[in-house]
Length: 341
Image (tube, rainbow, N blue to C red; front, side, top):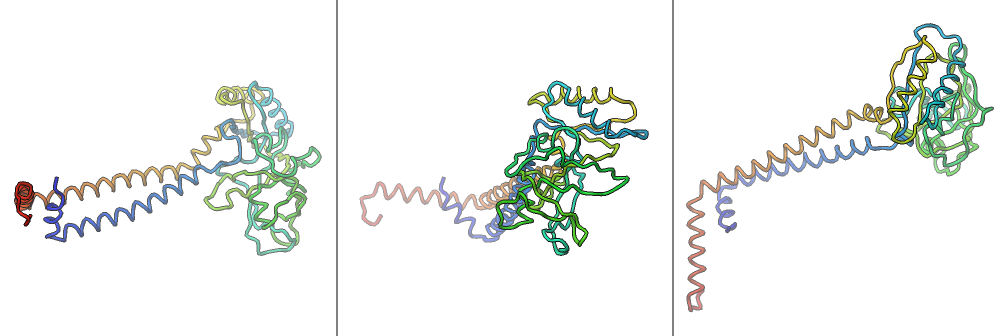
């Protein structure tokens, strides 16, 4: 097909090409911005937590009457969980990565009395059972795990205190001590003011995302404390053998319900379900933008085709005459011996 005559006919009225160019430019601008947002949302939703998510679950209980033997209850719960076939590790914990309910400390400082710090961190702690590093499958990149004599008992109804040692993520350590590469043995303070508690770093894990997992760099600012928290609310993190998560957690639920009848099951979920819940907004936004982008491209393409077809049909006779003349001229030149061709 001869494109040049068609293009020449369309250019006799420049309104249509200008409208097409404007539509294409607007579409490209919208598509580029949408693709950037989609990429950003999907990258945020794909961030690893640092834990062995595929094999981790949580189960939560709350009493419906007063419990006086809380520590004994927690100990027996852990024993029952670890006795369940298929369980690799278990621990009581106050929160889980991507759980969306978090315990936080703001204004962490490296000098007592400092008041201008904007470094904050989520505070994980765990008592009886395996350590949180073992249970979550975290990777220690420096230092060690907690020793038994470093754990403290904390009854929130009676007192408020902090441990003397912590394990921190590499991201938090770098925020506290910028430019440094070794962090074990360093001390920082939980909060502002002269009464802030000093804690010593004994270990550094590569990554541990916070329960809220904000889009900012502080999503990986986490610390772990050795605390036996004496509270009737119980949240247990369980790591199972690969591929056995559903079966094992069903057995864990039965074992814990059989231990006592003065509490109710609040719920259980896998870490994969926690991830899906936390990032449902990001995934929905990305899907919506993909659909809108595809629809916009379809509308733009339809508009270009429709407008081009309209102008071509309006000048069909002229285009036909021009094509006929072009063919006639080509045939004449091919059969003529004249140098004028």
